[in-house]
Length: 415
Image 1 (cartoon, rainbow, N blue to C red):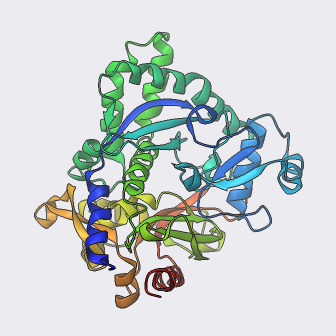
Image 2 (tube, rainbow, N blue to C red):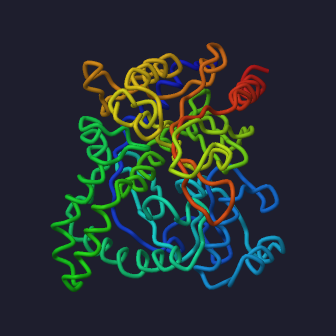
């Protein structure tokens, strides 16, 4: 007998019970399941070179140049088109990546362990704002920064984390940052400060020279998104804990590749349900307008999937200065998300709502029945490769992905 309500409760309780701990930083090829030299992971559902957006293509080119497999756009494109390089979603390898999310075999990644259920999740390192690989930039300065992050910063982060008895509890960090004005997706100022504070005493004990340690701490401290990537890996670990519950209609992944948005549902295995991405509505950096924007892109919607991000905007009214809107809109957004979710998070609470738990566990039935789609807040990439970030804003997923998933659920369970 199908017991959707019980199965949904099981899935969401597993998500909320999950305790993600940042354990280390390591090369992708050494830790990510199925990673190999000729594979590039990317954000969103599956994509081909021909259908990839400008920023996605730019990030692919940059990653191949970084790996020494290509020297320019033409040689990188030839490798991918010929089939010598494979493209696969991060989500299909227990990983996530912001914006284009492109991760290559030698890139260092955060390793997060859900100590409650034993599953691992991974995410690459955050480069900061502006002209960076994840937004499709691939110039020499972008590659130089990546090499410093990989060759200098990452090994010392791993050395520092090895000195920690228990790693960094990302659920506890997120809970604290929500009480300090973050929402965990586009506003991570408090979380990044906490993250840097947790790492600082460990980093000072590492073997590096003092100026190197200083450079790393300055880099982490100056980047208000430093914590985003381990937060995303933590949310992936939490969401994956709720995946695979037979009979559950809970969404356990929502991701965009710049061309399509895809979702996965707990009770429907690893199948993707896809539709065209939306165009974000937001605020643009000086000199740019909506005409410059790429379609929505990135795995960072794993935050909304886990109950934070746009779902927790009531905790972060100041985010509207970055994505547009008003503080009242931020609160209204969170209240609206309660209508399409099945639980209030037991660890993530919102002071302005009387410490009510964040809306958690999107039920695709409610989305279709009420016509309320999950809200996303997001960075905006330039539509052309090589430019980078041009703004930030709000966007909605296409309605058909929830409708298609619900039809598939009915076909699988109600025949």
